[in-house]
Amino acid sequence: MGCAVLPLTLSFVTMDQVNLKRLAKELGLAISTVSRALRDSHEISQETKDRVQALADKLGFQPNPHASSLRKNKSKTIAVIVPEIENNFFSGAINGIELIAKQKGYHVLIYLTHEDFQLEKGILQLLQNGRVDGLMISVSNTTTTADHLIASSQAGLPIVFFDRVFEDLDVPMITTDDIEVSFKATEYLIKKGCKKIAFLSMAENLSISKRRHSGYQKAIEKYLPGGWHKTVPCTPNDEQNRQVINNLMEEPDAPDGIFAAVEKFAINTYQVCNERKICIPQQLKVISFSNYSATALFNPPLSSIIQPAYEIGREAAAILFKIIENKKLLTSENKVILPSQIIYRGSTN
Image (cartoon, rainbow, N blue to C red; front, side, top):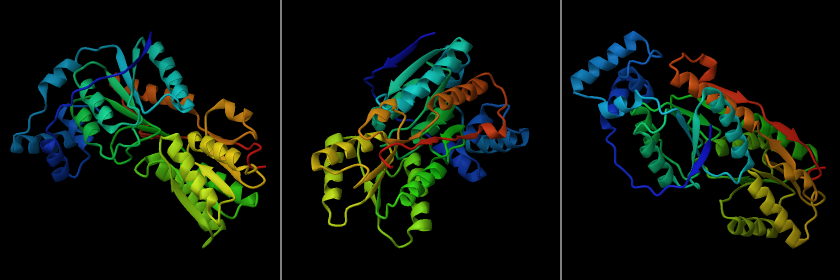
């Protein structure tokens, strides 16, 4: 089966989610649980279904029959929404997804949001019409609300998160041990002599950014309580990042260690250090999340936290197909955390 990357020009549709939200609030349930109960999902107990239906009848709420009828006919296609493919993590995850999809006889449609929430929102709305049987998504760094995801769940579209997730939503999600591995990476910098470590951060609203910063912060609090530390917000724009890092290194109390949340920021750091004649690792030690194999060829080679991208994609796809096939998920499959690996190289030694 094939794999297509789809550039889109989208018009946006406004959907009324007030009734579903009200049902969930009054019943003290997750919106996705209410949605599945109204669709008579086998995953929801009969008692919960009865409670939901009783309140729905009382409020006069009716699910969207058009979306439900469309979904009865299988398209033999699933969708994957990612913020970019420049990052090697996402290409690795897509390879894992494609493997499972081929085994199931499914096509894979890949949608790029280019870190644009409005585009992501439009793609979700497009997919509610029965075009695909299920969806895997890693949200953009400009996504701050889950309303569009709730609407898709309400329309009966099976959703699985991977990597970048909304942890409050009641849908399966596949992530890595970001907190633990970020703690270990920061701890390693400290043990190598760093006393002033800067964290180059992604958008603060992203789940992975929060988890990675949490691990960094825990290590600082354990080993350098009250000491120098700084969180430096970066962007998808390389030129802006280089300027931010350049300003950081110009400060009288410049850092002696940098922990980059993604490889893009590490590359920007190398570029600034090259321009300013700052020696890595003698003057500045650098470690970063990165699935880019060429980091081993950097000068010096970059110490990297490598996520199991292929395994994440494979696991996410396997869980999605269990939902599509109406198989009951194990409790452990609702939230899967896979371990990352740290490769220590010349940038920290």
